[in-house]
Image (cartoon, rainbow, N blue to C red; front, side, top):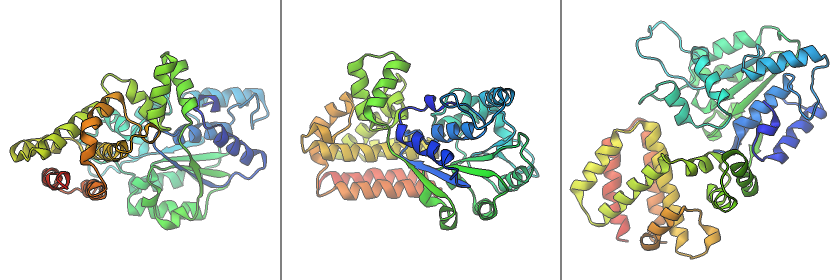
Length: 381
């Protein structure tokens, strides 16, 4: 994958290339930053360059046949020295003796990468048919990775271990990865791509070099929307601005089946029904949400947090402080006054607590009905 396929992030690209030029490539890099900033895209492009992909006509390999061979393999994400680790589920009907590893889903993973380097956990879960299961990286994964990385490089260069969402490792797997990071096999580079690095073991965080990625500049998102999606400049500029550095959000705002539209509708129903103190309707609302998968519930609550923040900022009547769509702004015109300095912190804390409890497998019907009834009190403050 070429660096040219990464949207924006020129400074980050230059920093990565400088590490190579100065022969200071660390044995473990952890890409962090906001959702949709292109962490995975940068990690994939960097891995490809380390394995021989050309950038500006230059390659780390010296022989033309070797370069062409490496690029052909990387084009299909089948390079033997590139090892992927990512969250997986235990498929239904599989033997309890089988230890689930990433390689069990390698076909689906390569298909996902083939469609582009920007994707969400939800898209991956849908790809592997996860339903309500939570994806994890199991103990067997670290054992398999240890075996792979201790085999000599097939091409004589780097061996790359690219780990997507390492925070989803169970404790045993995390401890085994720690040992690998402490005593890395020769000429091995670990590239971790994390959405929630604070969930990782402190000992792992201390053994990787953190590479923080900022949101994509608005101008770069607008340019990409015009070039890749063939939309007008005015619409591209508005979408780029409200996307707030998030390419995935920009794409969502283009989609007719935008999930955020569903979340917006549910937010509106909750707020209006809570204000009217209609317990019967609130109970029905909470039961509807309880049927969602946990990942979708967490995304919905995150969207609710965004709407609470934007509604509060809307009260200041300064356009540069808000990042809502036209539909969201229309609703906020009448709703925003109900989110004020007396209740905004309490509502945000309640939503964050619910996100945490849902992640810990709390009963969703109870959680969402409690949230709905508490909102009655907060909206009257």
